[in-house]
Length: 270
Image (cartoon, rainbow, N blue to C red):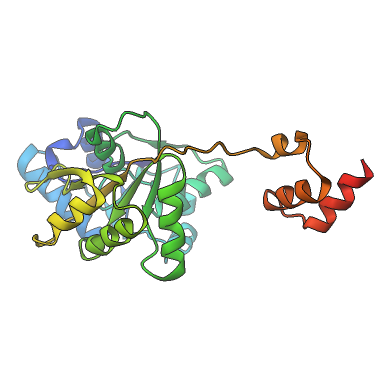
């Protein structure tokens, strides 16, 4: 049986009893990083009396995932196999997605345990009222792709959660200030760890405050949605508008992959 097991995102006491029991009887560990997993298991053995498993440990990531599936795919059902990320919920923005897809395609039973997640923890701590949000994980590091992704995150109409590395956090704040200096943000540093800290304010004030700080640790950034003053028309709504064919064809072309000329010809025929 293959089980995806979440690990603590900071404080080791956040491990569950169920997770430790499965660790103890595991025969094969597939790990994002075997060194990180072994350190966690040793800590659980020393602090909480968990029996260190007599198991094989192998890395499993986006680079060697297919190779590992060829190597171990046949025993995922017959052995006690666990997959763990470095920290937090497996599969979410994580190479464990390859394993889930493999199990689904081959009818292999698997289980995913609930556990710690920086995304939901940071959003709960943000205090933002809306109960729904979008998760963007890490933005592209640079270039047009980063600008496009950040613009989308800023203007999608929903509260949006990002991960950011410490050496890029100042850059991110500068970029947000350039787009909307008054946009409200919530920043969570080192969730559940010794130096955990929360910050909330507009982008400009946070950017200015952080210029006086040495930025370290892991960060989750929550961008508050900006309420739009304009209503967006849907494709079906545009079709029903009483507009000249040329005008309507231009609008429909913007909302579809058909050119203006093709829409115009379709409209005048009807």
